[in-house]
Length: 477
Image 1 (cartoon, rainbow, N blue to C red):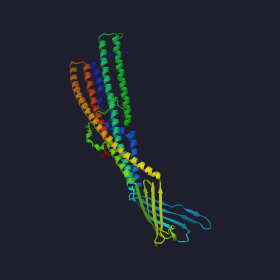
Image 2 (cartoon, rainbow, N blue to C red):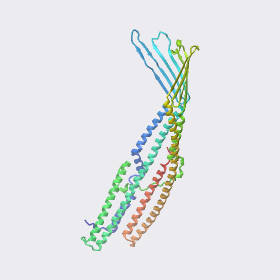
Image 3 (tube, rainbow, N blue to C red):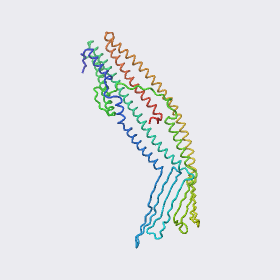
Image 4 (cartoon, helix red, strand yellow):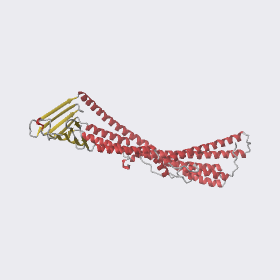
């Protein structure tokens, strides 16, 4: 098949330039619409949002469970059937306040019915408290960890939006690059058509080698244009679906936004060093682990006092004042306890003592102490590694910024030059000084660098996103 070119030269130019001008037609969707739709349809953002909600509930649960605790119990209820039905139960109630040195209030009783004695036996009211322990510190660590998990979930969602925005612009950049490739393919096709027309004008026969080779080059160039156009249309359709908008453009180029917002490049040195993600994370880990180690006391001492009505544990079942203390050493390797139940008439007090030893736990405690020392050293190494990573990131970002600024300036300069050259070439073409091919080349080169300037604007946004992702930005939450 041969391509006959019988159309008027100016008509042909108008048709080809219409293809190139597709980038300047009104875009079907604004950039804001595309970006908001892309983020709204992104599965990663949805997953991170659900994770944040879960961590919010977990944090509320942690605060509630460590604020106070109330327990009510009926105890074991025993019912005896016989000549006379009898019921016995041991109800109890307790209130604990972990934030007040594990302060606890307890009330318990032993009730029988019927009870001919008319005495309520073994009813006691007691108060317990930690005299020396790491309970309050452990509670604080637990709350801080829960709050940290919530904060990290908030940061993950924040970074998720930024990362997916970067992915959006990366996809948009690929579309512009594909559009530029299509434009270059159209120019090549036009050049091949010009060459083929010259061959025909020179009188070559359709059966000649020159004629057939030139015609095949036209066919190949046409196929290249079709291939680029189909690839661009496919990619645009996929991108439109991801953005949740319909694809109704006459040309795939029509879908692309006409312009990209201009932003100032961020300097990595404008961000505080301590907010560098790896440094902040290493600092937090060292801080919270240090608190955990301090909370793990070598010795724990608790005390309790109370009053028992009709205490069956003393002679005569008298009312007693009860006082007790307990100590735990080396992770419960050694436990000591002592107590006294003093009748209110100060007769026949009852003393109690207890001791238990687990030698294995002494060895385990020693091993744990060594592991804590190693962990502290590892945390210091992690901090040093984070510092080194920051220094490398600064060099990489500053180098990238210098290259980006150079590229922006170079492409803008080239675009200004080719835009001026296009205007001059159009005038020269109308005056018959230059050929159609010269004018077409000027148009394509101008469009090439116009698209490159748009791509540069996208790369500037992507650079800023990459820089922001290196740091925590809690003030933006």
